Amino acid sequence: MRMSPFTLKELSDRMTPLDTPERRNDYLTGNFPRSEFVTDLDVRYRWDLYWAAEGREVTRNMDLTTNHVDTALRNIVAPLA
Image (cartoon, rainbow, N blue to C red; front, side, top):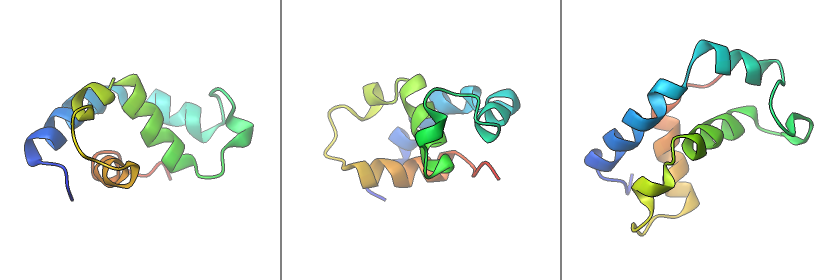
């Protein structure tokens, strides 16, 4: 993983409080914007958490691709099902 442990922890600290049972249930039941267009619910969920947690503020000045960030997000957010 290209993200440092410090950055991963900071991102996790921002995202974990937002990963609630209620929010997970909303996603599992399709109760979120544009749910009808989602092909991979886990990807959508972890990226929505990233944006809600303002994760871009943490990763802004880093040389990371979308794949690097997604690898980190998979380590932070457990799959929905």
